[in-house]
Image: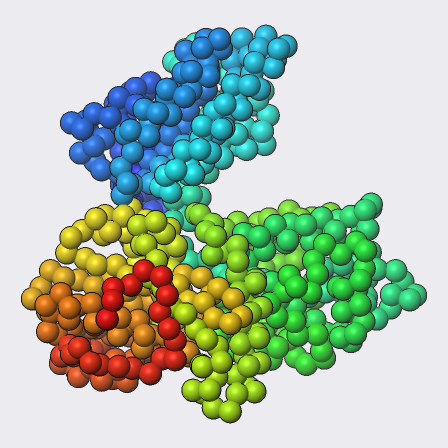
Length: 556
């Protein structure tokens, strides 16, 4: 997927833009960068429909703003000018484009004076308030963590009065380099598929010491010294879990000894309910990891395994090469920093949706569904007991989840087409395309938005261009209900046939024969496994899916 990038600012960022152009040419050759015409007219550039920026039509626009310049160095009118700037920005936004707006760090000679009556803090706070409000109103606007870059360096290293007076260059060369690194990281996040599960060892990994020896050597997990290092590591991991990272345990231990610590130790941050899988036994760790992958219905390439033992890491690398196995730090004081690096390298996403924050709960509910399945008399009985409810959701109101679902789904994905958020926004406005988005609930809870279908209506016979469904709900015949829903709607609108494709990949074999099972006939097939299907639409077609419809849906 190619990108078109623009960087706009109210201060001179030409050096940073040139540096970014060099980095993109070397590492992201399919990404084009807009060359701004000067600086200081960012709103005019955005609002001018005849500008070169508008002709370039960027997918992502970064706005790096100096707050003191934005208020024209007039703190008395600062709040009103900030509000006016954000109102103008909102008027200039394109729904199909993505915008990153820098958060606030106010700096300049007079900022030292402004500290006395906290005017500086008030201006920064007002900028942050307006930025957060705009992000809440516009899902295609996100916060660029510019302030974090400055705080990491220190203002004395990030800004240069000499450079400012020479050419309105606010930042030092090193600061501009750090800003470029941040932009590159965000650009790369847009296209990568993050890992899903962090598997953790316990002894000398999640805590110091050995669980089975706790009576003789206390576990190192406390509010000070080495114990605090492990407690802070758990705090970082807990933060990752809140961002949608699934946690699991793979440990060679006596289960009772380990669970006593996890459940009852007063300094434990992570508790049993924070983990979607726990394998605490004496079996080889590759066996346990492979079993977790089957239980969660995830590919092994979704997992990151973290263990203090070089021997265990080497064994997992050799036995399960798809699993990512990062190095472990030599000293416990490096634990938190190492885990932050793991998060940024493997798990961080461009945006975290409400679906991501509910993942641990959803997988815990899946365990209950699995238990019900083993107790049910047969499959049909199991589906009836689940009491599934399916409803359509607005794709426009859930564009980030829609894009995430299409880009992150590998197994239940008939064509494995990927879309940037900007491309998805354009598709949602395309009269020749129709997008369906589905939520599933059952007796155990809300599975969330789990399926999406894109139908191409540009030809005489409609074509299912994309059909994806989360692996969390595979194996419940939900796809039957979804296809039937689409077929019935298209029939009511006058279409007599519907076509579909299957494009094989290394990961989507589970749906290789989906359309055959749904009674579609094969029109064409080639040696690669690619297949084209068609079905004649009829008003009375019914497929067994043991679910009922709720919410918005056309009447039968």
